[in-house]
Amino acid sequence: MASLELDNSTIVKNLALATEYFKAYYKVAYEKDLYSGGANGFIPFNIEFTLDGISGIKIYDKLVVDTSFLPHKYTKTLDFIVTGISNTLKDGDWETVIKTTLIPKLSKTDVKINAANFQFVKYTPEAPTFNGTNLPLTTSGGTFIQNLVKILEDERKLWLPNYTETNPPIGHGDYTPEQATMWSGRFISWAIQTAGKDIWSPTIPKFSSYQRHSGYVNQAKINREDNKGYFKAYKYDETPVQLGDLLAYSHDGGTWDTNGTNTSFTGHGDICTKIESGYAWCIGGNLTHTVKYAKYKVTPTNYLQVGGSGGKPSDFYTGQNRPKGSPNTDVFQAILRFTLP
Image (tube, rainbow, N blue to C red; front, side, top):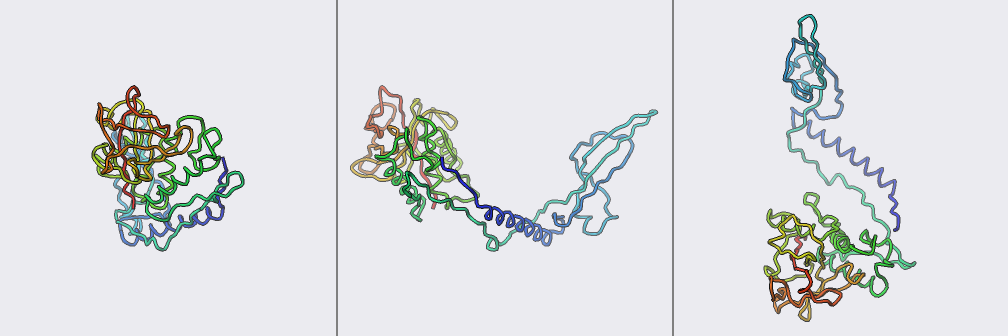
């Protein structure tokens, strides 16, 4: 596996930037919110006092204290937090000692910083090499689906006929087989994450790194139920197959309804990169130990061809050219669709 070396100058620049952003945030908070203490220039101090025995006070409780003896600004921007409690019983007298620490209040104001004034430095690793040949990993610079299709087609051309899982292109993507089995989930995750690396929103959860295909199927079902996220699941007969769709099935049986949204199963998934000749041509990893096409029979309107019992797609083939169905236990689970720009 090729090593990744970070640029120290990039790290230093980004640390300095983060510090300046922090200062700017609290400066705006202080100016906009008279009840925010901020953090700049704040010097905390402790107060300890003794009183007649009392119960009910706990560590981290906030106390209301007369702060009129402090500068005017402090009286509205400070909280006293209990950090210690001790009790003594002597000669029939009960005393409680309470220790507090002064902390600044957090801002209640919606503080907005002009992001145009701050720009993080992005580290771009060098293109990996294989057997001395430079093979740059690039996207199309287009939409998420265009990027995804290009990445998958490039991977297919890279692997065939040169590589299998016993001699993979070491250093190319973090999906590279660590063992001779169960790397198809990592391949799918890598392709989707790479295609969306410049498109993901920082406020919406990204497609995670899934070892099991059931992981993203379950999450896609939840996303659809909650109407959120970048990818949602559909039954095989709800929508025609489109470019970029992820088609997933289970080796362990079970259906869309019986598996629900929290069922772990062993399975597989492939991503559609073209539709022609009555098939959705999809690319997946660990298909006969390499990266290649799997083909799924579709109708003239591009719905998955269905038939037989259990509502399973019929004439359903993988890259091994092996039909899915009885006596096998493979059952189609979902079509996943992405909604990135």
